[in-house]
Amino acid sequence: MNKLITIIFALVLITGLFAEIGDLLWEENFDSLDNWIIETGNGSWGWGNAELEYYSPNNVDIAEIPGEAGNNALRITARNESGANIVDQWGNPLNYTSGRLNTKSKVSIQYGVIEARVLIPDINLGGWPAVWLLGTSTLGWPRCGEMDMMEMGGKQSYRNLHDSHNGGNNQDNSTVNQSVSANAIYYSEDSINPDNPSGAASISWDPNDESCRPYYSYNPPLTGRFLTYRAYWDDTSLRFTVIDNNVEYDLYEEALYFDESSTEFQSPFYLVTNLAIGGLFTDALGLDGSGAPVSMPLPAEMYVDYIKVNEWNDMGEVHVGPPEFQYETFGIFTDNTTTYNSLEVGVDAEIYVWEGTLSQGSIAPYEGDNGITWTTNGVGWFGAGVMSMQPTNLFNFGDGYLKFHINIPAHISFQIGIIDAWGNQSYVQFPAHQTTYGLVRNGQWGQASIPVDDLRGDFIDLRMLSYEFVILEVSGAQCEFGIDNIYWDGGTVSNDEETVEISNFELSQNYPNPFNPSTTISYSLIENSFVEIEIYNLKGQKINTLLSENRTKGNHSVEWDGTDLSKHPVSSGVYFYKLKVNNQSSMKKMILLK
Image (cartoon, rainbow, N blue to C red):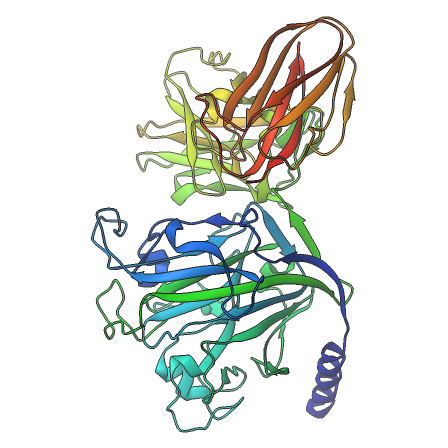
């Protein structure tokens, strides 16, 4: 039987190795950074790894590759630099800066061959360069999943353990410049232990040297020259390789085949690239004070020439931009209310109680067969909400309402809020013994209708919501309550790509698009109407009002010169223009390039 299993596995592996790479789906040649978000700061405890650097936008740019005239690349520069604002999360000074970028709300990938051509500088001791991916799931790490296509700078003990394979000399003498590895991380209950409370399962954890195969190159080392890294990814498996001098080397003895504990890899991921300094992954100093001094020569420059995605095993999808826009009425938890689209608890959403602050109640549903009912557990506060498994784009509901029914005692003060995929939170208050947002509390079910404009606050990204409904109480009052029939209402009826015809107006695509420095927005009216045209950024924040007055029926146009309300030029990127006519509106996307 064991021999038969071995033969079957070999056939599967051979079939995978000789499958064809398909059509190009997407390519980033780094002629601009429009697809990327440049991160700032030191995160939480050095991004969870005790890293020593402060990520600064000043360390990220587009530059011509030395010796390759006309070929641009992403350049990340690490520096020995300190200053008043170069601090960790507690305000302690840091001595290094570097760069980190991601495509979280701009480009996501599900399956395919992901390929990156990368040049790493001399990292000696302390450099930790990586090109990797994180799951777009709203679940926290490691439940969202992580794919590290390439990373260097790991510990000497790790290199020594595996150096009898894949170019190694079995002499335990490789340096960080001579070895590169890859990794995949996911959540597994079997991995939970006192040293690993997060349950992160890492395929590079291979103490018996059975499958992990870092690639070694002693002369020349892997630094100061370009190598190509690949991830072969479909709905059943994930394989990592490196291509050096036209020879492709597998970074594991076999591919990772997904099972019930690794389903994270069957959802979309977004790209990340960075050049860290120090931290627990390396033998160098970290924020915890352990490790050897950083000896990486600084400044140091990492180049990423391109990242591209091709089909693999006839699979692969690249989504550019935030999640698809929702509109009209969007259900969060409702049985009978008609909605255009909705979440389904247990399928693409879950109801979470925070830190055991609530337990099951006994109040019957307001409508239908399903309801939410809780009693407080006397811990001084409570919090709970409905979270989608993937970010939800409710940007079109900027002029709409969050509506819900609730049966809660009148003496309870509570808050209703939302949380976006970046961790921003915003709440509105429901004081005790008051009628707020239409909610009358008389011991029966009542309905509240919160304008999204009140709910969103200053920083919420409506394109990337994780919790579409949250209830929070902080005074420690005891009660039993029920919630039901939760939905967003009043989303614009258009999508952002097509010319949309509504009963009394038509909005056309701006021209030119992309544009610089100005563009024209055209529309037509069936009858005399009051018209507003507003400009929004990707976070859903209004940055300009181009028009707010009566217009006669017929064809009209207005020009936007790429400035905000204060007449200051805005940066390159994606913007939205919204036309509101009487009680209807339509919105479209445009791109400003500089």
